[in-house]
Image (cartoon, rainbow, N blue to C red; front, side, top):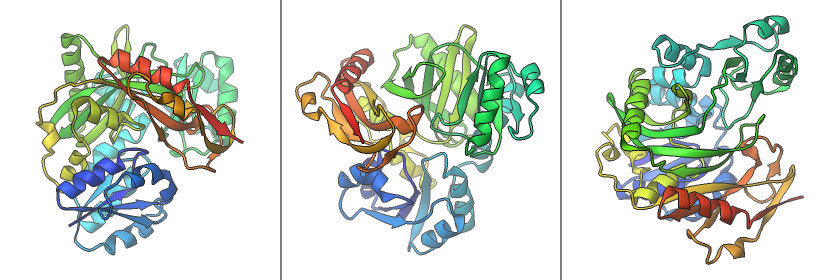
Length: 403
């Protein structure tokens, strides 16, 4: 039996291959650039992963490759950018898939904000506009300043701006007109102040389980680059229960099915959704969850691809350790040429491990979003706080060479 995956997150592929082998399946990865997965392919079980080179932005080419795979039983989508194509090709092949309406809703940040506002789950609706047609004076009048302005279908902290004052808007609109916007337009919402978190959940047939909450270390404003995460945040029991009930209301109300990575801010007036991503958290968040509980959560992808109730929804989860990751960030744009200082990690508390996320020779063309990251350091600790300190300490020992 074969299961296909339309691209993958940067990490976690080797765990998915192991989960497939346990279920008697072979995993087929369709990708536009196999070099992105070199680190994970090297760690995968030989013979249980088949890689197909294809333009994954072209639904017809994807459909052609999938149609050539014998005994294809399921299709997995783990990335934002491939989520809608995965829905389309799964429907044409009669394969199980996520709730299409829910995925399309969360991939449109303005539509999601509007839905939440109508359900009383956010204090403000969106202001959606086309930067090429918008009038600056009107935007200065109607935007809820300070505001976040972002690509309506963006990902990876790209095309996100903060407008504090009316005079900030002309420059933002000018930059947006020059940007390659995935959704073609922009949406604006109030800038909610407070720490950023993400709820890592799995949903199935009207039930959502909170696997835990990840914290964030963010870059200084005006950029929104994520620099470190830790899992799980040790909220007081009552607060944890409130987050479980709140995120269940957000997701169950739209009929969501599958893994979700819901970013939210805890404000002085309660939680506010930033966005809902129709996937497991990126970076090493999935690995953090696996190591924290000593469970392979990627098996749930296989279960759901086969239209089976995921075992993870009911499995006991006993917290064994705190986990954290910190990004190795390039200090300049150019060509990535490797790391320095990895030998210094030996003997460092928390057993830190460097996980490269870029192949050598890859261009570094931005320092303000996820594209500045060339690798991640994962570390553990007796508590999540200690794990984060270990990861942040370890990443300081490394230097990304960029020529």
